[in-house]
Length: 158
Image (cartoon, rainbow, N blue to C red; front, top):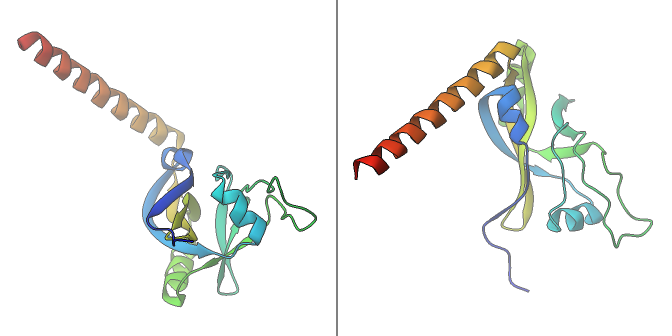
């Protein structure tokens, strides 16, 4: 069987960029059971309510939904169990110090396979206030309107 190459995205958390200010991102490996890997390879997962926390010098991913494997038997996994993440010690201490500052949390942005290994992209994020969310929506809408006007002007100018 040929070895997998490249990156295959399984799930993304698009709402995270709307709700949080992303300050830093880090790639982490995941400790998974066999049926979890099979379910992920089918492209099924949800990161919507997921978060990560640091406990006793280890990073854990909680509340990420990986559905049960359809062909699994009694060895199937729990869908929202806490999963251990694999990071270097320096990365863990850096993240621990940042989250202790206050206001920062660890949010999963993307779940993917990189050369056949399950990875998760974690973001060190700070929650946005409601007015910040409205402001970013307004900015995005203004950019869209400006690009439409430019396109219309270019079409009429030709």
